[in-house]
Image 1: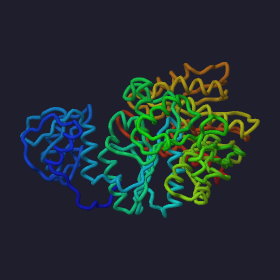
Image 2 (image 1 turned 60 degrees about the vertical axis):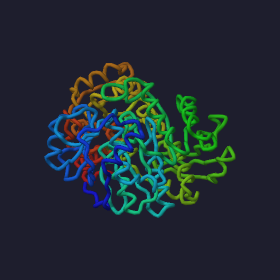
Image 3 (image 1 turned 90 degrees about the horizontal axis):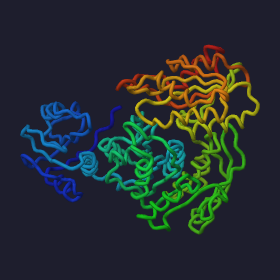
Image 4 (image 1 turned 30 degrees about the vertical axis):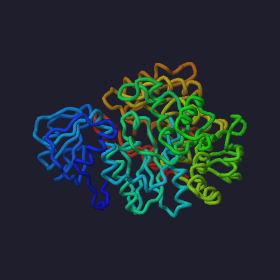
Length: 520
């Protein structure tokens, strides 16, 4: 991934000191010298001459700073002093300092964008794609997108994302590039980790969307407990001018009160299923849902909800009745961004999200579904929806795994969801094991499965082989669900991103080998 050159930007020692002081981050300076910095970096191997270097991360080593200076860094920002003679800005929090200074270095680019931030335990990516598609429909393709799947900055600059929300320095570089490419709007997923690790420190959103919250991302290398997870997600609402909140979510009152701390109640929009909450601004009603999508209606309930002029019939092209709420949130965001209802309707029926409810229909091996579902709630609702749509089935096979060193709470959740929805055959496999043994992860999931409800559980370490085995054994009328990875093309293993074709690609190849031409 190579970005286009950015117009000359810089920051100097004195302005950096002023900003850090203003935000209460500066402890002291060492070996002061007035430098002009034409580059900012945290990766020593990317350093050029006249670079301001950030010493960040628990695994940071002084050798990285030495290499940065050798490559041309003239000053560094750190939480401790390194005796190397370079100009040093010692700060209380290097992550916040990096976010603040890189935002300033790139000229506070979000000031030139109508920025929409989306958070939630599930549904962020689908909502981001719904929203970005609607915004592009009404803003002549001038909407940048930063999502779990892809980053799109305009002028053909589209690349796979490494993180749901990038490191702050990368994020502000992307935003500057988007502005330089003529983008006027921004839609981005905002993870809880981005607030825990101060990746979005100093970034303000025009609209903040809170979809839902459930127990996830708690454990080693993530949030210490659910309270911290919820607190970090709520920060989006505290840093947004207008808030859009799903009134049906768990912990709604806590989230709503958090929004009211810094947002005028007149700028808080509540949405949900018709009749689900007494003070909705916009209500949706599902009229028909199938494997092609959902037909639904929107009705303004309050005066400000009616002022959005969204009343009418819609079709959401991503399957799953649960995606109607995501589409509703997107419609509100687009309306706030001055997109017409007609453009919103057209956009919502033309959305495609890779790895979300992708369908492969076969001639003799059932129907294969690929979805990013990766926790209790998403697995349960996915299986319930598919079983309801498919009617009488011969067998339901689910292939899944759990990541290592994070989201430990997912493992009992998987066992519970698989048991409650009575999957017939579960093949446990590898899914980003990190530094854990994938077989031990699988054994832990298996320990939470009720074997009186789930007929058969197997372990196949190689994910491609697990997918091949599941589809090969399927018969007409069977359902095969490939859950967890979606369109992810890596297996994170022992600190390395190992290339992986992706579940859709693997499944398509398997079907093609079994049936010649592949899917219908």
